[in-house]
Length: 255
Image (cartoon, rainbow, N blue to C red; front, side, top):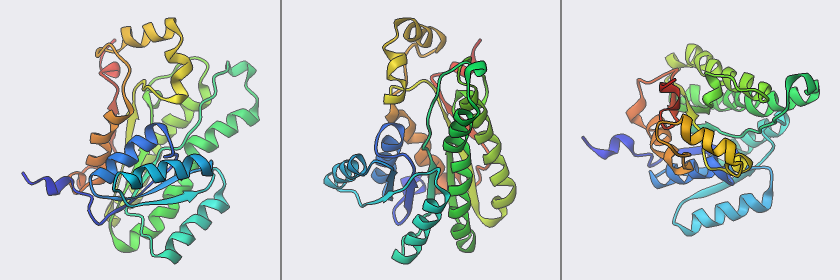
């Protein structure tokens, strides 16, 4: 089998929330597979540093600074892409936030903040990308879910609801866009060694729980998402649609 099936040469990928963490690892993986990458973030310094590091590694990188929860900024970013001749072939909806608090203490504004960042942003950015993909009759949308796309955990209610929504948003995208030549799928990472999880990694009780609950007996590494995101972004997945692939060390497979 030719490795061309997994080549992203000639394709451009927008990865939201890609100045660090899982987003940056996936962006680097897509670039290594041949894609031009559009990095996104709201912190210009961190975004530029990530872009420069990738350029130094020989990759073609653009920067798109915008807040994924600002609809006007998202629309303006895609209008800039149009004006500059940048066609987004691959969209990875990765940006998100976490908030840990019991539901009875959760303010409605906090709930909305998490839902907007993790779910509504994926809809808005996905919609803008699809408007451009549909006339070309090709495109890949990859939404980033979570273990909480399937299972709930105490103190992260809005995140759980948002990530459950990501699974169904992916299916809704499939229902409307598959016949237009677009594949919409999702990835559900397990517990990963990221900045967002650092407090959990440093908590001996939680660290022991993750390692005991996961058949692989360890936390995942951000780079372990690369194979899955490249597969879903490549021609190898042209008949895969509406699926969520869990990269979780086996956690969801066992009791």
